[in-house]
Image (cartoon, rainbow, N blue to C red; front, side, top):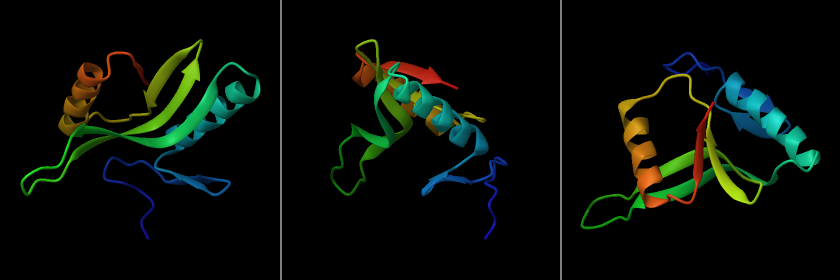
Length: 107
């Protein structure tokens, strides 16, 4: 099995969690430390948001956030990106429009 993606990201395992890149795995470790210290809470991985519901022969469009957590009472949606695809940029714009209450961060 090739552990590299087409963008040269190397899958990394921490515990029993498989991350799509070393960058994402490292960020997870940082966020776990922040959660353990009480700086953030409710850390979730790979949370799915529906952007467009399925209809008439079409699949739904979804956004998969690397991390979602609470910080100072706000919900933070965070993604680790090495390369921004056109699909990702469009989905990020839809996320910001559909969920204006969320704070969006890219690492």
